Length: 461
Image (cartoon, rainbow, N blue to C red; front, side, top):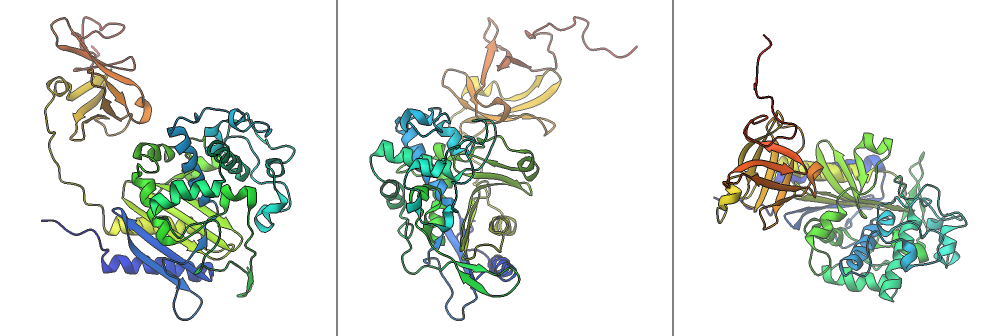
């Protein structure tokens, strides 16, 4: 028997509506729209508005602020995947003369380039980009505030530099490259650098009175790669699917996984919050759930994209107010509501297509010293090594085709696992990055570094 997973249950839909209704009311937002994605498609859309009559739907544009950075990161990683740059390249190699060229491409992507958070005055989000026509106007006289590569410090000018890098290597404006290489292939027809009707107006809500003030919608000019874009919940839902699964027309699944991998050393406060940053994506542990995505804000607008990759659920939340509802919390709650009310149904268990005898010989229980581990072969062609206690170092391994395996995650990521055999071909032990795993704790029959006491195990007496 199979069950359709396309539609959400009525109780789940009501819980989602309740959550955004509370957010809009308590956050005093003129309007708030949201969408939920599951299984590669949008399965719910909801909105709340202070205006009587028809509320905004999934086609209404809102400004998405720093979610723009994720789009810029996608363009940079396309350049890397094409071999036009290396993430370890200093910016100076490709865009010389900025005064911040010591930072590498990867450091700029992960906000560890040491750059200031903002451009010099006047406040760039509420003034025309024409006031900052050159990179020097964005960076100022002292662009570096911290040692390069040593700490995470969120930087809008850093993504301006990445936009300039895209333009230099593509020989075309950032906006044109983005549309050609990302927006068109992914079908994001309602995403762009300028608003197109229908779109929301941006508002500031007075903190102590229920009155509003319109916010200006400035063209950010050079700063556009850090925060210019307008989009809709429908388009960002499709973008969330791409960030989960990849799309070979834009980036492979392997590269989007790389984007989701922490790349910046978190600060003390970030450690306490379980927050980190990848390559253009925020990474956070919240209530035992790994969430990736990005938030955004510009005067008059708030935006959030949250993806629970393991749950296969994503949420988009947009509002047209300068401050108010904490959309990162709302997005995480929408993911949690669906994941808990309708947990992901796993694929049916299936056996391996073929049993590889040498690999099958390695399956079972092993000991690193006295620590027990289980090595299991799985139907996806990988091997998993997990502690029997349930706590400790663990990893999956990919077969290399020569009898060795490479670690894919955690402490053993990139480390080589090999079976060391005796002259008769039997397995003596496993070597994992020089660690020896034996079939019995400190097996006397195995080649254990330092040897094993010939008297064997004993009691106190």
